[in-house]
Length: 282
Image (tube, rainbow, N blue to C red):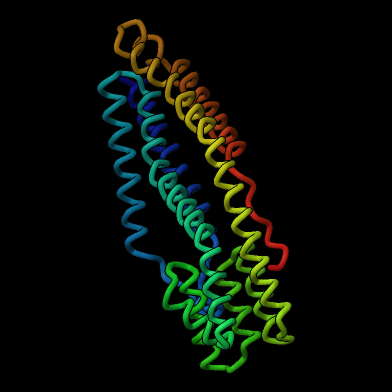
């Protein structure tokens, strides 16, 4: 009984600690708002706080339930930490998916800018068209550009604002090319945009091929991370397994094994991930 209570208490402490660490990491994500929005103090989102509290509560309940049902406190600790970490992992995966979608949209965005400029339109008209035809962060940057231009009539400064909102290596190159077009003009700038669109398409195809070839590595990482714990669950159904893992030493073995599993999975996922674009012109 004391061992079970010790395991549950340790699971609650580790789960709460993991929640705090993950909350800090998520709060440091890149903010794509305007300068004025960044300067203003942002109140804490009540919905985010409520979701975090619900996640921690569910993690504690899962830790209690599994530790009580199996009689193995270490499994309760592992299950509690995993339950807290799953929403953070899902958020990271969704953010990576959104970034991938934005990267795939850049060739079409550059084509729209080329078409607008070739038809005799200005940079402001081209960005206005982009604000209506695009979506997500690209549309947000174009809209902020239009708001800044209508307020200050400063095209160069407004382009810098759009660059900050886009926060992309490709977006940096697009903005600098548009800035060059506004300051110097000439047909050479149009050729530069065409060459940029061609290069972005080539880079997108290469990254897609790299992701496809690295997919099996991620699958192997998932299988390798889950397989040992499936074996532990099977062993936990037998009396000798519960007796071995139900002690303090068994709990420590499970915690160390869990730490090694998470570290190995993160390392393999890092190796399989394509190299991020470096913002040279940021």
